Image (tube, rainbow, N blue to C red; front, side, top):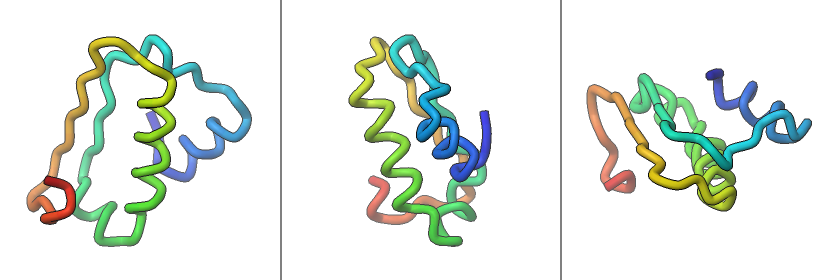
Length: 70
């Protein structure tokens, strides 16, 4: 759990093993994406996907959803 910057820091340090990850949650996604963190979110999600976790459930909580997210 952490901000995009904190998660990226742990990814760079190879502190995370996403192989057995079950859930990926983006909270306040509308605000995070409006503040310019789209590229960071995409990088994190691509990294998670490339780790190949089985049965990963992605949850995004937001007041609004930008068209590109669909």
